[in-house]
Structures are given as structure tokens and as C-alpha cells.
Image (tube, rainbow, N blue to C red):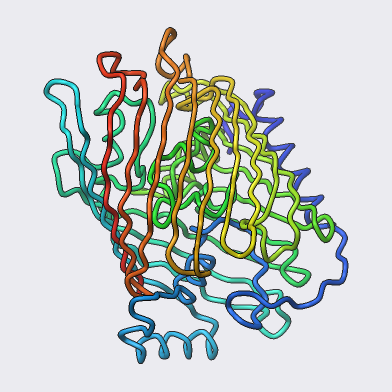
Length: 433
């Protein structure tokens, strides 16, 4: 039974907004669309979600190319995986990622380095509708996150006095879930529903360089540009996306704000009894559905209910984003966000930059600049604005192994007024099988 809190106006509005969205999504008009050629060949790739969404990640890993070692080193294994997908609709991936960070300066007594690793097993199993194309799939992602040094990269930014996050997934949580949900597609994949334990960064304010596994290391260049208080992974709830026309889309969702990925099934209690939710609604434009996170302009509205036990205030905000894939190599972007409370890291933020990929699905050069104003309700008033610059080069040594050197400059770290700037040097490695 729902608690008395469910009668609060904020909770009623959150649930009403999401319910209305899903009703609209189910009734979206469908227009004819031809099959399109993509980087994966003749396969139609029309998926909602960002580069870290399980099925998008599997596709990216299967189609990565290297100019150093062209062939995959364990080809029989990948052929076996392909046969499972063709015969049974089962696709999966296994990867291991590690990050090392070293700062030029740190406050007295604070660590100047951080390192950790993550092992992941993820996959999707199409169980219904394979012949019709309106597939329903069971999707999962389970991980083990562990540190190598006294502090993990997730804590490194605050350790340096920077009001932000550097490689936030790289913590010391141990075994945990990220995804465990049902995914359903309709109308030639133009409508998609996710329901279960979700990672909000899979569908909220996504773009191609947002991934902490393959893109920027600093969270200022990821979901919300520091202004969205993204719920923890494995958050119980639902999300849906639909094409309103050939070019316009809508994506929305509602998830539990008190999720704990190490104890995901406790989410049934917090979802139905605490009634503290994170809701989002996004409207956007894209040249075509299959390019939805390479080419799009969107505006994302969000609302976060108060977390009573955690002491986090309610809040709301919006983010705007524009990315354009040019000449098959360049991906310039500009993104900005505003937050009114909510426990976000920044209350205002602007990020801009560019990605350059000389060969599609191969090496990637990224450069970004960010300005942000730390959130007063999170850190207190009177803090200086922060500036961040980052450049990385993801070197695809083999189709399955990527090495990414990274350099960041943190200017005016808000929680460390003794330092005007700090350099952070990083190295990330990822092996995907």
C-alpha cells in the first residue's frame, strides 16, 4: 500500500506527467521509413538510448575497428557469439576497464592519485517477436567495481577540492547491478519501452561522447553537464521513447530516487513506500532514428522529489544539447543546463567541444571546455565558478582493446581556494569480449 506521502502534490505531478507521457507514446503516429545502411552493414539500427545502453554497447563493440591490428584475436569466440544471436536472439558482452589518475597538486594530507577497475557482464535476450521485429527482450548488466589505490577515481575530484566527478563509475562498491529490465519495441522500433531496474543515463540527455567507458572522463561532459542529480543505477521504474515523425522524438521516464545497486530488490520497498522519484521528459530532433545519439538537438526537463532520509532537497531543471556528425569524422557539441536545487553538483553549466574520428568506429580524439557554477544548496554559498578543459585520445589498439590517455585542467576548484588550477593526468584501458 502506498504511504501517505503519495498524496503530496509533487508526487502526484510526477506520476501524472509520466503516465500521460506513456499514454501518448503508445499512440504515436507511425510513418513509413525505408531500411537504411549503417556502419554495421544492412542491419537497421534504430535504438533509443545512449552509447552505454546494453544493446548499443554490444553493437559498438562488435563493429569497432583498429588500424594497428585489424583482425580480432579470438575469432572463433565471436563467431560463436554471433551464432547465439542468430539462432536464439541472445547477445552478450564481457569487458574489463581500468583507470589511473594523477594530479599535479592536492590539498595537504589528500591523495594525489587514484585508480580502480570494473568487470562487467551484460546482455540482451530477445524472447518474443523476433519474426515480427517488434521484439521484447530481457536486458541485464552486472558489475564488480574495485579500487587499486586508497581512494577510487569516483572520489578523486572532491579529494582535490573540485566540486565535480571524474570517472564516477569507478568506485569500490564490489558486486552490483546496473540494469535488469524488460525492453519492448513496436512499430519497426519507432517506439521503445524499458521497465525494471534502469540506469537513467541510458536515456536522459544522452549524446555520443557521454560514455565514461569510451568518451570523456570528466562528468562535466556527460549526462546533464553536472546539473542533473542523476539517480543511482538499478533504479526501479520505467522509461519510453517514440518518434513523433520522421525527425522529431520524445523520451521520458520515472524511476526511484533511492535506488541502491548493491541491493536492487530493496527498490520495491522504496519505490512503493517512499514515493520519491526522478522524472524526466525530453523533446528532440534528429535527421533519422538510426542516428539519434550521433545527430540530435534536444531539450530535457527533469524533476527530483525530496529524498527525506538522505536529506536531499527536491528540485527541477532543464538541459539543452546540440550535436552534429559532420563528414563522417567530426562531432561538435554544445550543451548547457540549469538546476533549481535537487542536490545537483552545479546549478548552471555550459560545455562545448568536438570529437574527431579519422576512421568510423576507430580511434577517437575528444576536446571539451566547461564552465559551471556550483550548486549553493549542495555546497553552500559563495563558491567560485569552476572551469574545466579536457582532451583525450582513444587509441583502438585492437578491435577489442582501447587505450585512452587523458589530460584535464581544473581551474578555480571551488572547494580548494588555495589552488588556482590543478592538472589531472589519466590513463584508461578497456578490453571488450
